[in-house]
Image 1: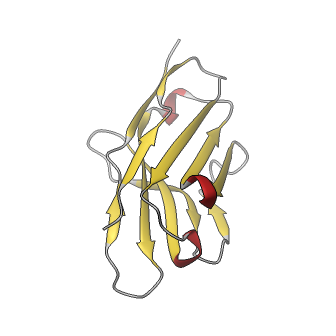
Image 2: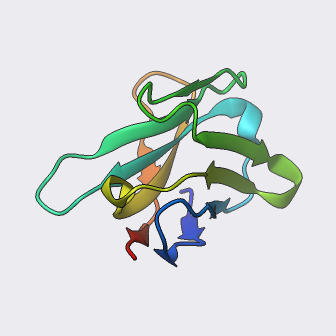
Image 3: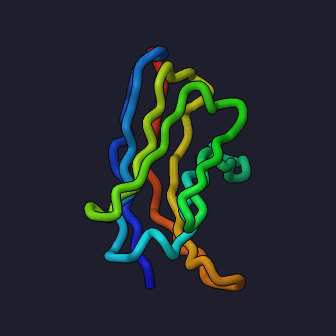
Length: 118
């Protein structure tokens, strides 16, 4: 079982930046697909950034000029930097990890709240 813990959320003014962290139990990132999602109350989760086990990275098209995702396996941590935050970025941000083999369990963290407000 993989455990994930998100941190780094908070209240930030429009135009500000945040760096979110997703710390996992010790796993080899080379064997795990990993992703950042966000969810507003009453809405479905939206994919923000996705790493394949091989390290290929894709972003949500509407955010790709403002987000940077990275992974540090030595630190067991995946990061999400969001710049020029907008009110519509307000959401719970969650990370997940899934072993690369088809049918593997998806593990989720509990999420970290990001609130963008003046």
